[in-house]
Image (cartoon, rainbow, N blue to C red; front, side):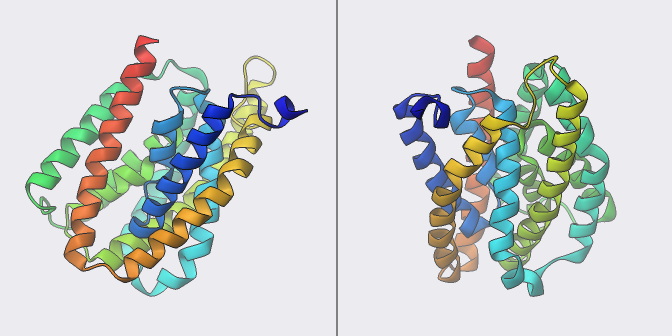
Length: 263
C-alpha cells in the first residue's frame, strides 16, 4: 500500500520536501524559480516528464495565492508579449519533451542561460533598453523552455531583468504570467499524453499527481516565508538576489543535464 502512494525511496521523499520548501521560499520572494529549482534538484533521480507537469500545476497554485496582491504592479506590455510567445511555443517545447532526445538541446539552452545570467550579473542587470523585439524574444524563449523543462520563467526573468525593472514590477509580472501559462501548458500536456496513448509513458498520470500532492504543502510553507521576506527587502537587495538566483538556476540546469547525459 505504501509503495502505491510513494514508490520511490524514503531518502528521495526527504530530499523532495526539502527542495520544495527551499524553492517555495525563492518563489515567494522573487516571483519565479520554483519549477526550475525543483526540476534541477530531482530530475537526476526520477523521470522528468511527470515531474515537469506536476511543477506546472504547482506554479499555477502558487500564483493563485499571490496574483491579486501584485496586480497593481503588473507590467502589461511584458505580460502580453510573454503570453503570446508562450501560446505559440509551449506546444513545440512539450512535443520535444514527449518525443525527442532532448539532452543535447537542454545542454545548449542551459549553457546559453548560464552565460546570459553571468553577463547580467557582471553588468549589474542593465544590458538592453526595453523594446518590443526584446519582449518578443523573451516570449519565444520562455515558451520553448516552459514546454521543455518547466523553466520558462527563468528565461523570461533573465531577459526582463536586462531592462532593470523595479523589483515589484518584475515580481508581479512573473507571478501573473506563470499563472496563465502554467494552466495553458497543462492543457497541452494532457493533449500530448492522449495522443501518445500507450506507446510511451505520458506526461500526465499517477506519478504527476503524486508529485503535485506531495510537494504542494512544502511549497506553500516556503512561499509564505519568502513573501514575508520580500516585504522587508530593500530594492537593491532584491535585484542582487534575482541576478544571483538566475546564475544558480542556470548552473543547476546545466549540471543536471550533464549528469543525465553521463548516466
